Length: 250
Image (cartoon, rainbow, N blue to C red; front, side, top):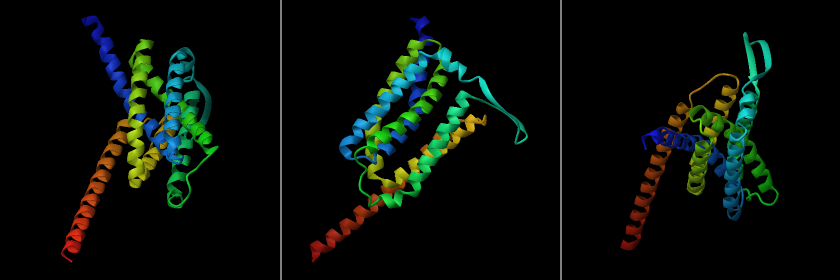
């Protein structure tokens, strides 16, 4: 029994880490799918997370190949006074992070225009799935490299990733509905996607920022926004109650 404790602890730890790392994935998928008609959103979320699962497991069973991504392939001498060496992993993180920054920034600047715009239909769903797939690859590489560094047993990694994806799949619906109900949270989510893009790009250039800072900022800001929303709802309810009392007296 006791000999299995390290495996159990490793599995539970990896599940927790994979779920936390999956927040980025769920947030991007939820915001991307929100541009589609309601009847298509759930399907796109399932496809997006399904692709995330496929990419993660495929990368796990290609560990030998994946480790080659960390070898330097490009060297820039005297880049800003430093010797900059990039691996394929770095290049993928820089490209994915830059894509996320541009995509999220574009969404932020076009929020006002989309308030009265019709919902995207038709072929756009394919375009959105492709965007999700691109980010799935980036997030999957980050996720799998973390798993490899924490646990040695491949099947424990697979089990932890499957559990994490199931949790993400269950939570995605709630996240999407919450974002749709409160537009201010969508703006906040897009700002965090920009921040995550900066984190990925910086990581690609060798500037390692602890991801805990991003999650703490995300959690604190979300609490402030939610408290603000609750306060506005109470004020609205109080105003409606006063109006109802005035009308009943008349």
